[in-house]
Image (cartoon, rainbow over all chains, first blue to last red; front, side, top):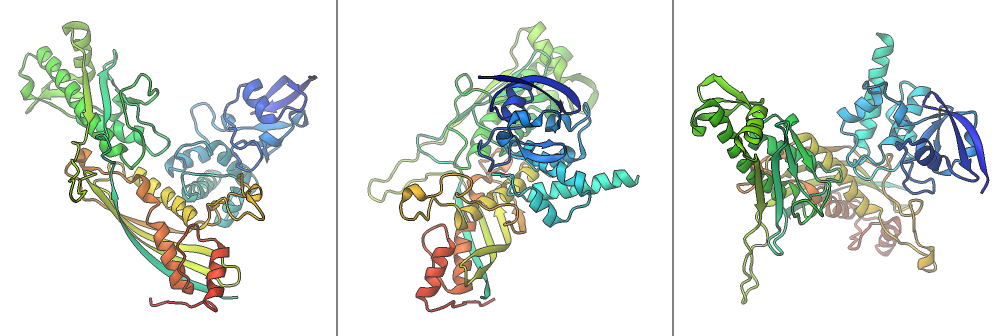
Amino acid sequence: MARTPIEFRHNGRDQAIFVEEGSNLLDVLRRGVGDFAPKYGCGQGTCGCCTVLVDGEPHLSCLTLAETVAGRSIETTSGLGKGVELHPLQQAFMDNFAAQCGYCTPGMLMAAKSLLDHNPSPSRQEVVEAIAGNICRCTGYEPIIAAVLDASSRMSGRRSA
Amino acid sequence: MTLHPGRGFAAINYPIGMNLGGDPSQALVHSNPDGKFTVALSSIDLGQGMKSVTRQIAAETLGVPVEDVYVDTADSDTGPHCMGSFASRGTHRVGNAVIQAAKEARAVMMEAAAEELEVNPDDLVTDGKGNIHVKGAPSRSIGTGTACAAAQFKQGKTVSGRGIFLVPLSPVDPETGEMTPVTCFAHAAMVVDIEVDDETGEVSVTQMNSAYELGRALNPKLVEQQLVGGAWMGMSHALWETTEPYYPDRSHGPIDFNDYLMPGPGDIAPHHISILERPAPDGPFGGKGPGEMCANPVLPAVANAVFNAVGVRITDLPITPEKVLRGIRANGGAKPQRRW
């Protein structure tokens, strides 16, 4: 199979990599780049575990052709925290017990980050809509919704401070 | 179209663990070279908090800070035997095994500390913050880590302990079949409020109120998150999850996340939970454990609420819009039973 060289930004760093023709972004991130944060769930774009941001927009990396991200910027949960300092979303997920098994968490965090980047003070309904493409089978969603709203108020406190 | 409100109630008794072959679980506890402790288990933590709760139980029994305990559930090939994470048995069965193992390890740690301090081990106490001192004389003290290191590298003792929990097998009365299959029960009661759309047959849950009695809540936040998540699973069993309908045959049935429906974040309802603590005499620090019972009362409560709302008694799950509509039609229209 043909291998194509592509370059993209990965969590703020330039990444150059050969990708197999037709390979998906999730495979390239996990096997090529070694970023194991995005998870493989269903492989057909219905569970949301593999959600990453492409130029700030949430994308299902299992359905995204790797070659289409050439020259674009990819964000995953590996890039959320700064060193040991967690992103307010990560801290709010911990404080609100928004994970049990944790498998959906990386996708939830990226869907939530995209929401808060575009809409820093979302309503509960807007949070529900933002995570509606991400399946969670442990928490019953309520702690996740609470965590995103909590992160939003923490971040607005930080902005006004 | 009318939205009919309905309210349903259910109460359950839930047995903790089971007694098929004694329901055993084992634990091994040992001090590492750095004087901290590892608890080895084969019990699986799949998010329910097995590692957290056994860590707390071990630390409390050993008398060391919880930070000084690591729980290893990595490998059921090499770890001590466990029947498994099911039947709401984890906290109770494994917790009891951990207590037994931690007591044995603690005794060695206290002997080692006594030898270092040149006192009688019976005169020593732990402060839970990493120190062992003479009762009434806190200045005569030694760190738990230092005592464990002295045992391992000076006195030639392993600071370790073995634990097992095994339910005495209950004989079956040949005449009546009577036996005692479990050692304790947890209890729950739940009121579910719903709305039924008499045009589409859709049932939406609007509120849940529940009370759970599950012994001492060893980690109240973990208990709460299990109950919230479990009630969601109960809603899912009651109203969503099925491989039906399929028309005209099975090959047209739901096979993936697109069609096999479960409630999404927009389908959930506020859930108010009261935790009642009645410590179990044979539970680890009185704990029984929430486990499967989180989901159980939701199903009968929703079924009762549907009857209350539209007078349709549905006896097979899930309560799909199709079944509700067929029921309403068979009754010649919605027959609200509301008396609240």
